[in-house]
Length: 104
Image (cartoon, rainbow, N blue to C red; front, top):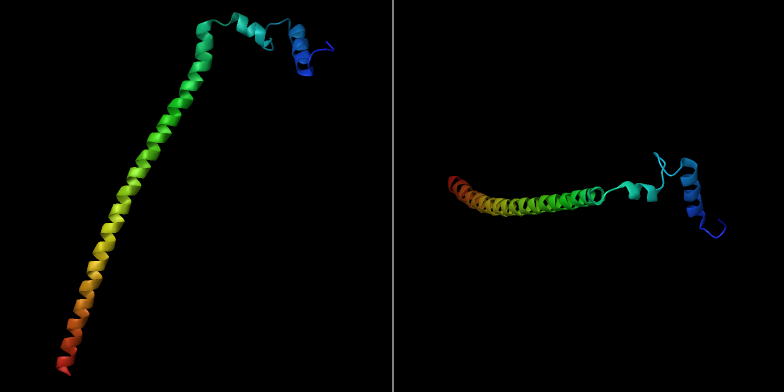
């Protein structure tokens, strides 16, 4: 055991202490009893879950971008409307000023 890495020595001791089976069994023992299908499910399902969550989050980001574009367009329209209102108020102020000059 002196030639083995310290971590591997502890794993070997754990396998010896548990008899290589049970809840604390070694990794090699677990892989010996696992079928290929079980292994594919154990590795594949978490990978598919991560990929699916990434796709969903990307779609959500796209939706936010489209919504923000619509909001920007609405803000541009509001700015244009405000400019028109300000111009009309300026014209009304001039007309009111002319009327006040005629009365005095």
